[in-house]
Image (cartoon, rainbow, N blue to C red; front, side, top):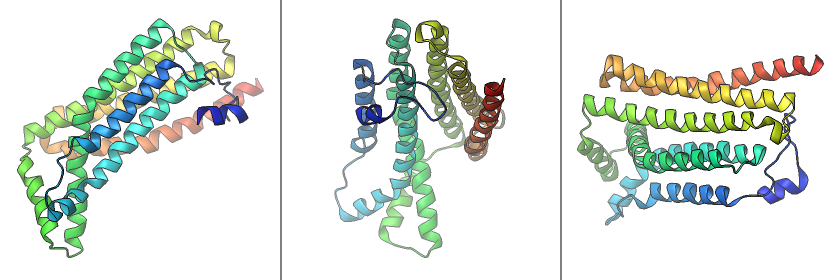
Length: 255
């Protein structure tokens, strides 16, 4: 895909010149780890032994979709970094290794949380639609078997939030490292501005994660639902800030 894009495009729509047109071994390793991470979302599940168990397992597909979307979003952000800057220096290698470590460690809490929430959402929808099948009862039984108490919900939401904080923090450091090498990379004013915009966006994502953590830290596991709703600020704050920065960039060009 990168070769295909590189053959027709060498600059982003924002005016950022691509410096990583050729994939490096570092990127290939990261892509392999992302692929393995998505595989873990599937193979870590127990294989159904009956058709009812197979039907019940389908109730977690919403959670699988959420998990995959989050991982692909992180992969896209990571890929864009190398596409934009093409760095492979020592600091980038170390930060990338930390990124992969956190990602792999993060998979099981991520899968557990979204599988639980996804199954609960789908089971509730099916029940409200009048479903009373044995598969639904099995799915609900599996949910009840988890027996998550208030303290466990608090711990789970903290783990989830900390994972995002570390991941976004590492990506911020990678961009700061690129900014420090602006002369070597020959970044112009527009490209520096866009890089700072990336950093600001990731800081906002970190703050949203911290806010979610603080909800359960202050109010306990009973507020886990509100802690999760904090993340709904992401599709609101990030696009609005991007639009603001784009308008400011136009003013910068006019100056």
